[in-house]
Image (cartoon, rainbow, N blue to C red; front, top):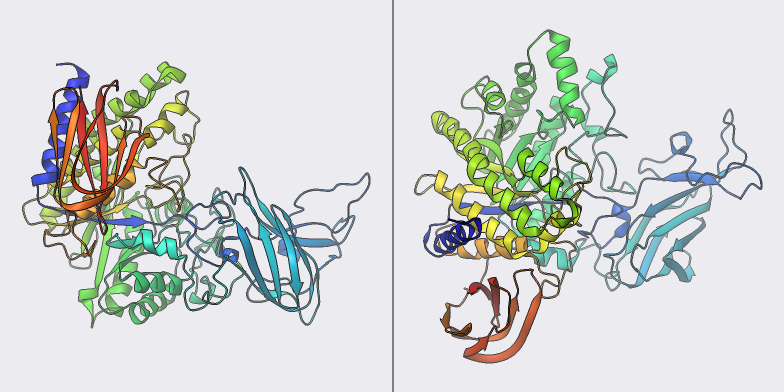
Length: 627
């Protein structure tokens, strides 16, 4: 049996599963970290994702050193929200050729909406917008900024003067058309629209959980003062000038997003949080989050992953520092977190789900953490549900180099999925059965990255192409089937996809189901988005507690005839039909108002084609095979 035919049989089995199997997965999503280059666009106030302050010479020094960023912000006196008390500034003892001004940037604004943005502020001073933005109107406390994004565009805000005693502060850069409503509705309407389908939201990256509180992610902890646990007063606050910093978004905003969408909330506690910090955090969320919503509480993130500062910190002070083995030495901090959450929610335990776990592919690590915790203090085993490339697959694709195709990538991913990755999940599930607790997936979906992670692979184009290829859709549907087959009848698990929106990258991963928030999937095919949305939609009427769509998808039948002729029949009139070829390109779009129509795919390459049918209130996706 050849590889292509085998893959087709797997594809057919995925279709059968999608049509006949019960729903065992509730689909949630992780959100992207806040950054000045992000494409997710959660807030209507773009100051929230501005880069932290930089400094540079106030004037150009002829023949001198004129660095783009002199990196002197730590020397500037600031208010409690991070705004400089006076600009320009000159610090005695520093070898400066000139006084310093302040600036911030948004390194990529390609995904921004073009138009007139409103810049609001308090105080007295002088500022300007550079690069792809310019001030077209200015009055005290308010300016209008014309921003026209283009390919590889960016934006800069510079402060050249800020009056001491009435310094510039409380900056807001409001999207076009949102000035009147930004206070009562701080979230981008399109963001809310595209998030509404998910069952839960995980805020790991919103909270800057990895390396929390550190200026640089590569810093290691090795000083005695680094063992001091962080008080609640050190948290991220609502008024801080940017949330693209090392403490992330305030918990208040996380609650407000979940309340707005009526979705369950998944939060991660900073690794070095004190008991007071954890208790205040838990109390705030308990009181602010709508009472009908659940809270999934997790200690830090991937405390076994040596890429992250939290793992280094735990190992240095709680394993080496106490003469204990790893990972047993870190258990005390996990337990401490569990105990505080349980104490705060002791009168409302139905709302709380405490999750613990370890490395999905390394069962021994999970066992040595989980089995050393106090039984009854945690509610779920927390693992990943990723599929990706093995080292064998990476090596084979590297050998193909630039001649590698999306089909080659899919072949090696599928091989690893069936031969290795589903076994990891089966093993973790057996541990959960022994403990009589459910399994939840804190991150899941495709993890198609090179080995080692962060290396630019020789097959870069293929790894990018597969992200827009029909084969990615097929991989997702097969993966859903494989995972659900692990669980017993009647069981349900939370599958937190990683992640929502992000740009493509062969080097660091293409994580988002969408590349930009406003992606037109009829023009740029999004197979991950279509697979996830189809899976969510299929679960609507299976007893899931999540009401995904208010309007059911119509029953669609596609009948084939010789010569690659197909007839579509629907119980409801359809408005639009789109057909995508195996490369994810939209090759046909028809606007109709019928319950039946025919089309013929002549002179087309063999493979799986996707037909998307849109009615007035819903959409459905079906597959056809062209011989």
